[in-house]
Image 1 (cartoon, rainbow over the protein chains, first blue to last red):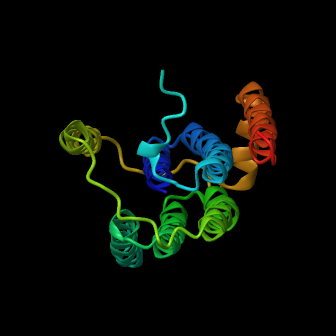
Image 2: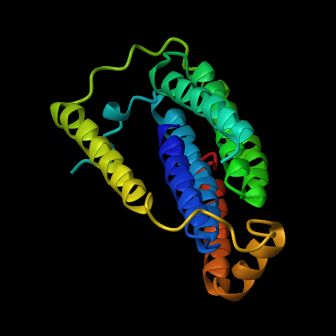
Length: 68
Length: 168
């Protein structure tokens, strides 16, 4: 969820500067970031659910499956 | 900036900052998620103040609608009520994260400060930020990027379906 806040902060900066420099490009970038956030949330939450099913835990430190 | 806009800006800033702090520091994930929804809606208010009506609409529909429902759904599905408290993050994290955040804030402040004595912030056309303006730009200059992002959404959808399968 903090990732969402960070993406939103970037979005807000993009839109504020788009307003300041009278450029529509900033709003387009914000639009792309929003799409990216949707994709990220979907995949990330799917990974969390899959790992929870596997390990019965959401603690990131316990999830060392890919450790070599 | 008119008087009403200033009042709206102050109210929105207070709400956004307060809800963001709640998101980061509250122990209950559900309350944290609800505060995030509140934060997203107040940021949509900022977009409205900044002549980005289309994006404000998208923010409410996509973020506060779709993504928040997804997050809340997963939190309630997992029901992590009896989870032991999160342990402290590492040394590098506690030192480096505030430094990087501070650096970003300073960079933003400098950018705003430099632009402060520039030309007045007036928008050239009356339809700045409307659906027509953004859509025209999106389907002319950024056409290939738009197609790429739609491809990314399809890939994310397929990946999510694959990950959610019963047997991985």
